[in-house]
Length: 357
Ligand code: P6P
Image (cartoon, rainbow, N blue to C red; front, top):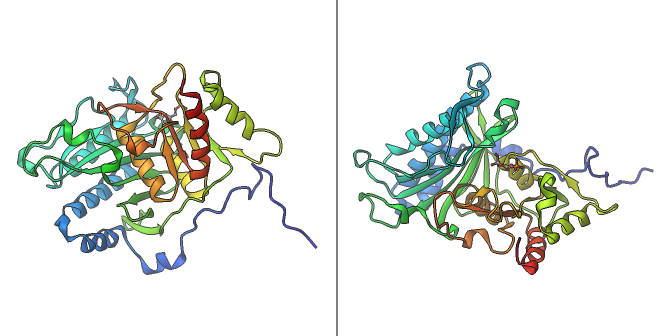
């Protein structure tokens, strides 16, 4: 008689089964377009503008997916030779993704402003296209330092309803908002397949692209995070610059018998996506060198925090709930602790007690 044993971390089977797509979802062929229509029918007050926005995000995602998948053949690897506002070398695909999303959104009559990691200033939609009712904040291609090695990358985005009247010129006050005012958020991940993970405030749902027909199909309905998991994602190369409480917690989960596993791709969207599906906590804590952290609040931490909470998880900056934060400028950075709620709460309690770096 064999007894079921829990595999050691790192052994095959040690990872929690991902929220496997229900076969009937494919059989029913629920497309992203149908999901958008059903969402619109439930919210007629949006007058189809929200649907238009999501459809344009889908179009841009498919364009970027096609380009990413053929980058090596099209000479799209490598940099443009420019350095962006973040002080990072711009990759050719960064520039392509940035342009693709801005062009897909600016003339659709649904967006008044686009804030992008790649642009120092916001792009205010010109009046000839109609200054629409939503603000779109994005990292057009997160993880782009991994492009040339074919590691998973993605587009991360958040959507706000503007504060100023539709049809008038938008301004920075429409953009610099607390995360609690997000109306939708998601990401499109370009990996072994292309998948859009989206929440409009009613749960988190994953749509997988079938490149043969150019359509996203509902493959991961109602993605949920368990209260806790034993998988952590952090760049331990910075351990010397962490605070004692951060170092202590990591050392604690590495003790023999603790049963934790470590996974770190170095692409936020990929690390978050794995943790969302299989459970895990991602940590990019404050360090002595970067007390404000590395990741950007408006278009990286906010969207993922919105998704994490919609899936039953949590996200903090080590002391405060991320969604309660308010960016004071477009590219405000923040530390990020995100994933299963009990794990995030535990780390946040420890970091709060020591008061930060
Ligand atoms: P580090 C990619 O450049 C990125 O912005 C995120 O996608 C990723 O999580 C982080 O930086 C990795 O940073 O310092 O570990 O290389």
